Length: 147
Image (cartoon, one colour):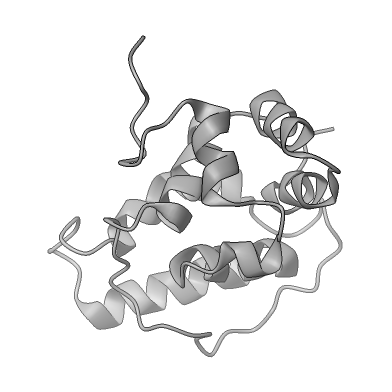
């Protein structure tokens, strides 16, 4: 069974020590998870969306049924970063973002809002920038350190 990012980050949150948190992130490592975490913690990434929770309808379908996964949706997140997609109007970006939220499970939608608002650590206390950087051998610019 494939875990959602919410389930993975909850495991990290519940892990007792930093080493175990890092071990969990490395165990479930994927390009899309790195993209989501970079979007959450890298201060250079600015979201071209209003802060706070937009008006969206939570998807209350049971997990594993009628919803999309953030793991798959991550490849579309670039559209919502400042300067990345100047072909979309602000209204269109906001509409697409709301559609993305409505397609995700309720927990993953809340996670994505935490990424956008740069407060993911408020949802998952054990998931800090220090843990993320050490897990993926990233420097302070969220770029892999070449050895």
